[in-house]
Length: 111
Length: 113
Image 1 (cartoon, chains in turn green, cyan):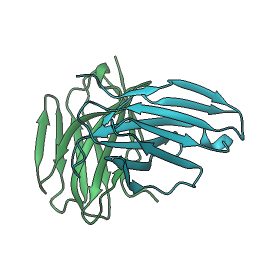
Image 2 (cartoon, helix red, strand yellow; image 1 turned 90 degrees about the horizontal axis):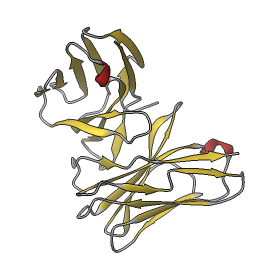
Image 3 (cartoon, chains in turn purple, yellow; image 1 turned 180 degrees about the horizontal axis):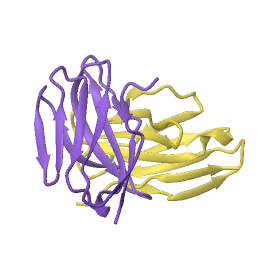
């Protein structure tokens, strides 16, 4: 069982559509990070959220940290082919000191 | 600033052999962590080194080991390779704080035949 479950696992959408990716856990996290990984490369950090209820925007991407710090979401507005990739959430459990990665969401945006 | 460099990019080994992977972190980063990525299991944490000491360890068998040198460069060794060890091995460096962002290399693709 993974500590961080992401849904959906796979997502294929048309250019211009909106989408939301979810990252859920039964554990409380001190912070959560979102990464995007493109084929043949390592993951690249998109954002870090620290405070429960926090919302951060990065151009067309909106990230939210749940009030209880157990979940997070990533919303993409008007998806573009350049958004294609594997999206990973990751975080450190409140009582721990190790990074855990989510199961990943593979997004394909079709032109 | 140069990014995280992993060598080699690709490796093909035979069952029973051993392999050593190398990681050069971003200058100034004292933490280096290693991950195994497979389609079925996703990103799994192997271990983390900070200032030459192993600070955290994941749930992998003792065949997987690592070390960090005084210049923060790190190596990971896998002995007695098994077919299931075929994976992308990623190294990430950071400043070392709990919420410090991880900077990943592009990985070493290991294939065990």
